[in-house]
Image 1 (cartoon, one colour):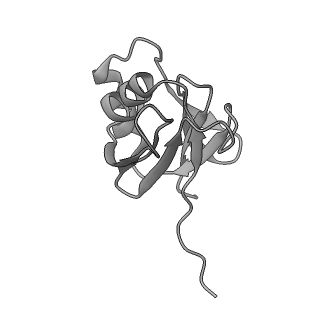
Image 2: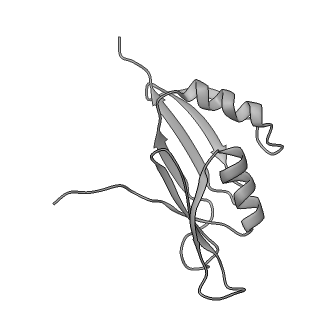
Length: 123
């Protein structure tokens, strides 16, 4: 047996707001989109490097307000990149976490929380 990557499914309510946050602000690309028919809810995949999310408008797929813990190398670079984008709804800062890491917390427009985590070197 071999476990492979995890792809979180996150509930969205507005394609426009999802694209503004995940593509314009976070820097992801849209990999694909799916609708069963015109006018039906959207299901799409966005990604950046090894980070992959499935974003869904479908009612039963996921609960709003989920949390995703994301290990990262280069948290200060990500924080600087996000600050330069001037997203009107967030102004995150890197914080020291009690588990020996530095964390950047983001909340998408649908209440889903993304916690970017970089462990501090031991010593």
